[in-house]
Length: 272
Image 1: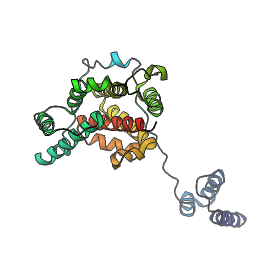
Image 2: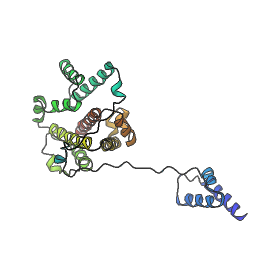
Image 3: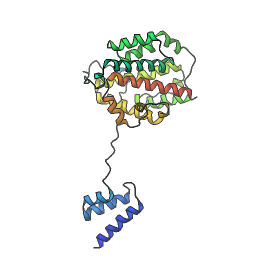
Image 4: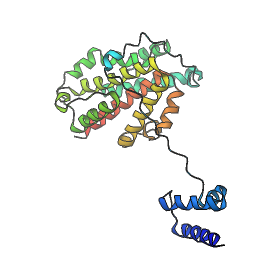
């Protein structure tokens, strides 16, 4: 009887105190109820224990990224056809158009001309890759001219490059070293490092490819969500980005990384 009275007293106190989480007191109370009335009663009175949160961890980053991007010795996994690839051709063309338009804006800060749209959309519809379109735009004469401008990176942009390169690329830059870059050279360099790493994971393990992208996307959303608009870029849950990446062609994951990274760097440059 004493135990029952004590049990009811403790439960009443817990309800009165509205203990919101599994504190030390609540944990002891759960153990007490389970001991004298069974675990089913502790669940009824206190609610079930929350599922343990499993943190998504970054895959191992190669120590020498440049030499490690040679994945010729690997047999690349073939990603099954995604639901996206089953869309009608006209719908796919709309997405390609949006990509080309956005790519021009984030790399050159200008909208593409009609002939540019036509050229690159035809290229994509003939089997060209989004990554190749990006490389073509940042290695042509127009971009070379931009790299010769005397536009130096802002302090906030440098902070982003230093912190995210160390965490996600395993590269420790110095602020003085990055200050030597023109803004456009820095954007291209930082983005290409990420593409090199994605290429490495693509040849090694697609799960690691998706996981690296997901954690990067989650982290930039946590810090820079106000710079974005769509849920695809503002959601802070790495699981959301992981599932999205799994359901998309690899080239689309890479293109989203490209756009996202350039968007961040463009906006941080404005925040002097």
